[in-house]
Image (cartoon, rainbow, N blue to C red; front, side):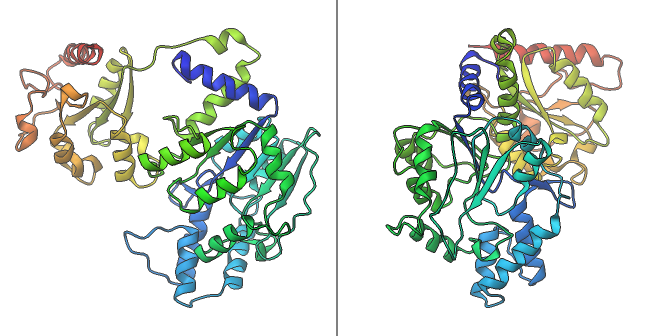
Length: 445
């Protein structure tokens, strides 16, 4: 839940617009998440890209993205397939999924809200399927890449939902926008003066009556988003308030990109991931009927703490410190939170950027690289230690172990007497002492 008055007010404002049916939901490629074979949440389009790469035996380098646009473009460049065959391949991939994929639970939460317009940037029909499960009335439409048709009809006054697939629909393979060349041609079409090629005026004109626009799972570093939003907002630029919420694993939007979208479209980039946003929005929408709950404000966490440990060997020590840290106002992360988040190193770096305190729980097992993926980043993080600038690395000597290198020189090692926390019957008192010291550090002006 949001934890301060300003954020609650923002959520309540958005919730009211959603409840009134005056909000537009834009679902980017990273919003349609499904579990891969390893149990990780992945965009369906990335799973499709991986399927195509495997089918055509397309090798991908470590620095190459496994995205649908990249893979289909590479297959065309290398003459391994044709546009029409790739469109059929993608259509077959989505058709083969049926209703089987395990979709991220936030999608169910979203369909329970009152969005009158849902703009989907992936070619699937899973959002429609979720509306079916709620027995909600809706109408679907999509842009056809090869045969655009401006004869679009939808009564926005009726109490139903429009689901519009911006880049085509898999049941009409020729409609799909896949490669970078497709994207470029698509942009040229929708910005043209040819009425039968551009996006339906009835759709873009309707945006002026729907002031709150939510963008979930978009990569704003994607080159075509600037032109796409310029087209979508050609008549309503001054009438809307858009917000962007990325997935936890997305790359950060660069500062110059943020400035562009803020300046041109008034886009806001609140510091929360889309799954958290959806959960908070769902709760605040329910709270509209319960004013007391809606105005309840908890104190925001004073800091975020990242505990590093060997999960298999030192979980007892981790639980000990979690128990004590829960008595002070902090948000706690451990390596267990990396499950389902994709690449562990990437997730760790993203989490470190949010944290003010890192607690390595030291033991001989901590230095087992197999059991502790944080070990590879230890020297780098130790070098960043700068308590005065709100980044404290505080190693805790959990079990007896010989220390060498930069970490051994840190003044922040605890306990102060450098006697192990576990094994001497003083675990609780030492953990309390460490927690109290950390509380003073976090609460200082």
